[in-house]
Amino acid sequence: MDTELSALSAAVGTALQARGWMLATAESCTGGWIAEAVTATSGSSTWFDRGFVTYANAAKTDMLGVSPTTLTTHGAVSEATVIEMAEGALERSAAQLAVAVSGVAGPGGGTAAKPVGMVCLAWAQRGQATQVRTLQLPGDRTAVRRQTVIHALRTIVALATRVDHA
Image 1 (cartoon, helix red, strand yellow):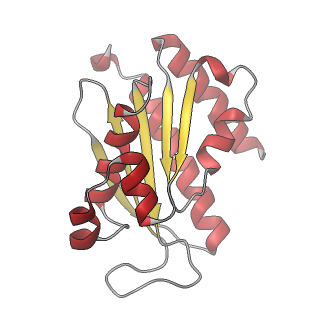
Image 2 (cartoon, one colour):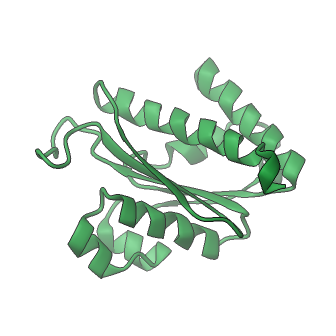
């Protein structure tokens, strides 16, 4: 793992451990890269509960409870879908915080409405409103996926260290 991901993973662990929180992941376009990044950190079993890799729409429905109507109406790459993914991961785990991602990593698959590099992320936290964000990331498939992992991890650190969420 590269140094930036390693440092971010350690920061995630420190922040979650300080809260006594566990993390769950629900990943589509990153294919488990967020889970891989955090589990590369020694001792992560004390703060990482589980990861769901739900690349296919059927997996999103079966494993995370994403509504087929949401997928039909909004598509897999949508804020509505990642919100349901994050909330589903939280409900199906012992975690206090879950992150979900879905996007168009490329090189194909993009449309005018959902171009290559469009990634939706959501963070669900017990007792808090789910946060969601859509990014347009530059670069090739690997670059889009890596930037998504970095953004997900940075936001986890920010959420876990917020004073108003104590």
